[in-house]
Amino acid sequence: MRLLHEETTTSAGEAFDDGVEVAIVPTGSVEQHGPALPLGTDFLAAEAVARGIDRDDAVVLPTVPVGVSAHHRQFDGTLWAEPETFEDYVGEIAASVASHGVRKLVFCNGHGGNSDALRRAARRLRGDRIAYAAPWNWWSSLGGLDEELFGASGIGHADAMETSMVAHLAGDLVREALLEEAEAGAADSWGKSVHGAAVGFDTADFSESGAVGTPTGGTAEKGRKLFEQATGELDALVGWLAEQPFDALTPEPHR
Image 1 (cartoon, rainbow, N blue to C red):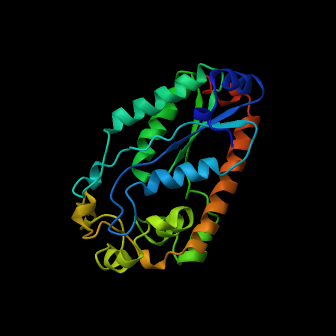
Image 2 (cartoon, one colour):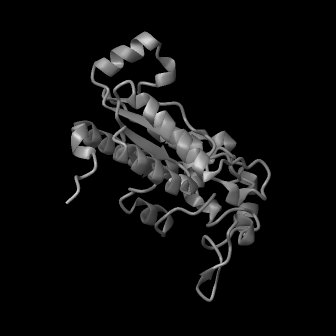
């Protein structure tokens, strides 16, 4: 896969002139993932999936590692940016590559906390007719694989799904001896509710270990299957986007 940071200005220009239609921007976070998984879990996954496809019509931009993670701030090592800062920063990266003629992008995201800011950035870029960016989470199109592997749909936090992904991508970063500790202090589901009101704003409000789910259910083999499914879906998304004329992606006129 073509990585922008490895190009020279000359080779980048040649690539832009020779069929690169889509830029992929991996985004993630540096935040607690319980005692067993690394702080960089989210950006490691997003970066690996973005680099895992092989297309001549796409280029992968450098990863944006720090995201919207203030809700993990009680746990050591967590870094975060304000949502508006993150939105502006990612939007300006997209605008800069659009200035070189690549006006279609995928935000390949690995952290759910970034999602709202990415959608706002994408809406603004489109509204200003600067670029068209598709926000996409690596776990958003698993086709039922999550239920097949883990017995439930959706992703938790430092759960079996994330443990599997890291075990496949960087197994030496999983502290296997601490998976049971992570699970013992994990929440069953995300958030805390009282009489229908969401009263848990930070992870520390409802999870002792910082995990949500069952980390011990993760394996490298499950992670391989997740990775292959995610990269296949991203490849298909990039292929669809590459075929779209930019004008067809701009806002509809007033009716």
